[in-house]
Length: 262
Image (cartoon, rainbow, N blue to C red; front, side, top):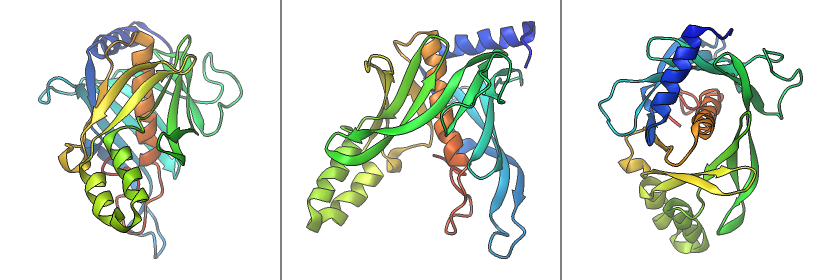
């Protein structure tokens, strides 16, 4: 992707949109296309490659039209590329091929991917399991890492949010565990922290209601972040969904991982 005036204008439009306090990512509204199904007896109804397009809207107005779209292509299980475009189709950002313009010639830490923004190398995305649940140190939590030209953020679950506290308490009360875990899993809200990777400082927190009260959208809080941190935070949430979208379908779930939401 070569930088040009149209790309620069698309980047400015995207940054203006991300300057709002919240944006909403809508996994349940994914439009799938280029779906290829398996040819074997056991995988005839399961996809083997597919693409999807997900809208991003303002987090303040649920009726607002999409300002951005994320298109994810999965050539095979657990592999993906994605791009962010404006509503009229101009590319703002995309995963970068190895050795792309300005990118290092070696791959990022596996699993991970390089990212371009505005036609230029921007950074990389990866994840780790170094964080442990606050009330259950043996429970590893996935941390999504988003590294840019001068900033780096990590997005991870707040393990003191009600859903984690409820699950830990339910597991400790073995006899009553089924009575506690099911309503907690369905109804308890959760939250995600965006932290500065260099200092560990929490930059902001995104809240999400329990599954039974959730409309399927992810309202990403961007308040208090600078421009680069806003870009990196959005990329981290997209990276997480792209991982789910690329997972191999389960036998009891014909839609496959991430097919109908995170």
